[in-house]
Amino acid sequence: MIFHSLRKRLVLTACQIVLLTGWVWAGAACRSAQKLQLRKLPNYAENQPTILFLDFAFESTKQPDHAKVTLANAIAGRGEMKTIEPFSHSNRQVETVFRNASGAVVRSVQYDHPLYRIVEYPTEDKSFRVRGLSLSQSNLSIRFTRQPEIVSLDIYSLIDNKRRKLYTLRFIP
Image 1 (cartoon, rainbow, N blue to C red):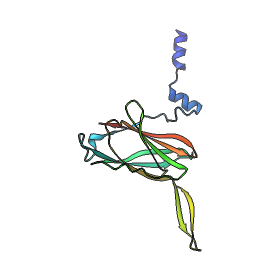
Image 2: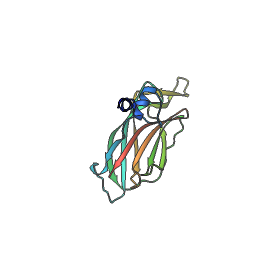
Image 3: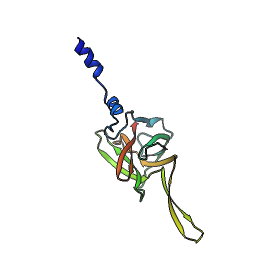
Image 4: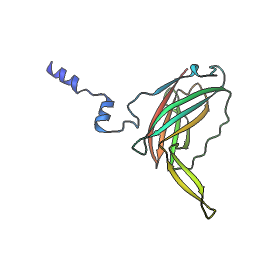
C-alpha cells in the first residue's frame, strides 16, 4: 500500500517533466492547440471552394527564436487561389505547415519572420543602406484555399537554421 501511494506521487506528466528539466519536447510547448470552427466564419460555405484569410499576431519573448502567436482574425471567402508562393530571402523565417488527419504534411510555405524586418533607407550620398529591425509585435497574414484533407496548421520559427514550433491551429468543420 505504501509503495502504491508513493508511485502515484512520483508519476509526472510529460509537460511537468519538460517544465522541471527545461527540455524541449518535440519542439512544442505544453499547451493545447487553438481550434477554429470553420462553419462560424463569415462567408464560409462547406460545399464550395473557399479561401481562408488568417491573421496571426506575433509578440516577441526574451528568447530570440521564441514568439507568442495568437490567431487575431479569420475570414472566409468563396473561390480558389492561384498557387503563388511568397518569396523569402531572409535567414529569419516563419514556416506554415498544413497537415492532414494522419499528421502528414500536405503543404508547407515559408514567409519572412514578422518580428524581424529588413529595410532599405536612403543616405545623404544618395545611396541605399540595408538595416535589420527587431520588432516587439507584428502580424502575419496568410491566405489559402481550404482543402478538406487539411485538419491543422503548424507555425514554426526558422532562425539561423534552428526550427522551433510556435503554434498549432486545428480546423473544425
